[in-house]
Length: 107
Image (cartoon, rainbow, N blue to C red; front, side, top):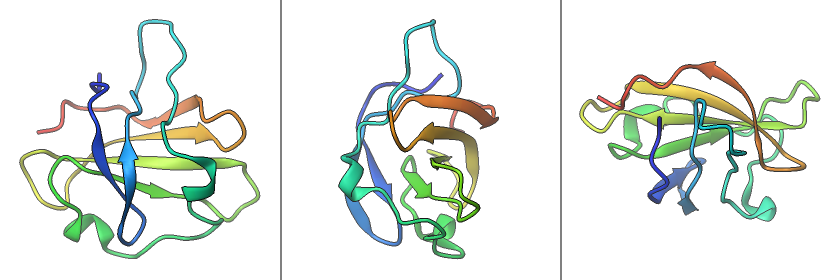
């Protein structure tokens, strides 16, 4: 499970700090702590950004297929470019709606 610690948030550049939990939880709602105005536009993403994202950061991407969600990629704390989990959050509620790739501990 992810900690509630703040991590840099990337959508091509550092935008804000993110305090989301992620990939499951103890039954309490898991929410994305990013102002809605700072979420990426549909389809916004930077190819290869994972390779430049700092260790332990989170990369946000918003699919352009009409779904009202944002995907959060959790970057490894030990290996550059390695995605260690992916969660989908609702754009409307900022709550976790599903786990796309279970978090594997960040290493």
